[in-house]
Image (cartoon, rainbow, N blue to C red; front, side, top):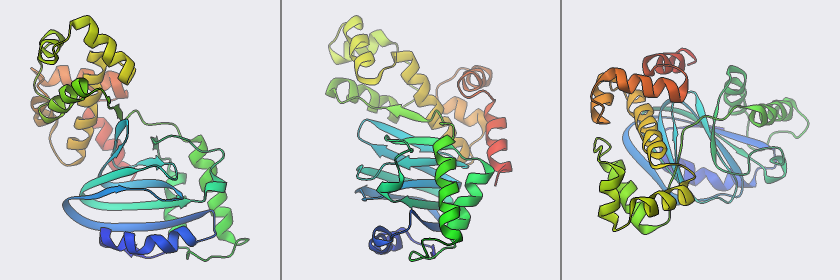
Length: 269
């Protein structure tokens, strides 16, 4: 399949992708952009979006996913989603037949990409949409699907509530993540008691208020770091009093420091 240089080309190519009979059809995308967005859409086939460089953000009803370099986003077939991207984009989108997804995730998620999975995706992009069903292409596709099924998840998901009071609060926090006001202050803004707000947050997101705010910080930090911001700049933009507090939070959440996290991602490319 061709390497695309514009997002619009992807829409024109999708009928060919959807009609292809192989288990996997992969398209490469290379471009530089300050920011672009694919509006709400869906397709019959499931999609695995691999980012080698650049940052992707996907919004699906009920959540937001951030896809940093060397991670991949899995979107089941038929699921309405919106994708935004920025930076120097080098990515691949592998589309999977519904009949081949029985052992694959049934919900939207991000996964860590092993070197083998990455190379299989890149290799599959070299095949035509109408390749032979019993050739090397089918063997690559079978191994690719196996690697997806065993790939560990990335913890880069932010659940979003449907309750309008809570959604308004969370949207304000996303706009100004440096606002560190207390739960009590947010409860007063929503006209709720602290206990009522805590119950709504837990019911809608499965998280406590503090855990949700920390997850927001993690997603924004990964997005900003991948876009070239410094650890000090990210720490300040998230409202941390000092860099060490931010680094400690990041290390507890993802297992490594922010600098190490990004270094490891760049080494895989």
